[in-house]
Length: 233
Image (cartoon, rainbow, N blue to C red):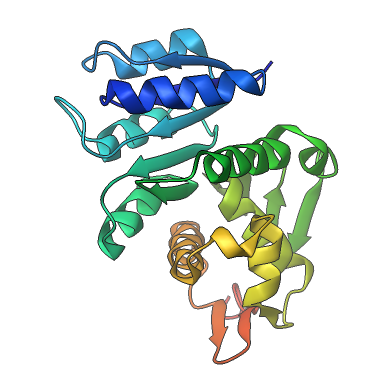
């Protein structure tokens, strides 16, 4: 049984979410003490987190960073904030998706199932134990890590999926539609700007291990990974 951790201070929303999730055999736990969210997360060890932005004490971005420091489980923001920057901040702080209130509970369920399939289900099993490498840049899909020489960095599930596709097709253009298809089951529920945010995050991760300007934007087509690192050596 999958466990869903709900970090939301509106008890009406918590009740409705739990009622809907219980119908589909999910186990749920909601936060009661908003000063000990991280401890409750560690004790419950959920498979996925639903997280609001506006919370007592610390906001959702803070708790997202705290959870990301110890776990790569999917985190879905559920928030009344509809601004572009709110969604960008959520993704930049480690979220996997962002759902605005008021939301359709069936859409929330679809997004939860999509993330669970990709991380724990049949889609994830096809990636188990696989390493993808180009010119010394090595992506460990199972361990969510990217390394070059002695430098290694951890990735989110979504960052790993994007890099997996780019590395497999290095020097070739990967369309935006292909990346969206790789990441999400149903593109109808995805803001196209979300992919821009993840591409920015992937560029930052590459930069942190010494890979600069290798991920190129091909206007009107998509993105291309050019293995140009180490050429000056």
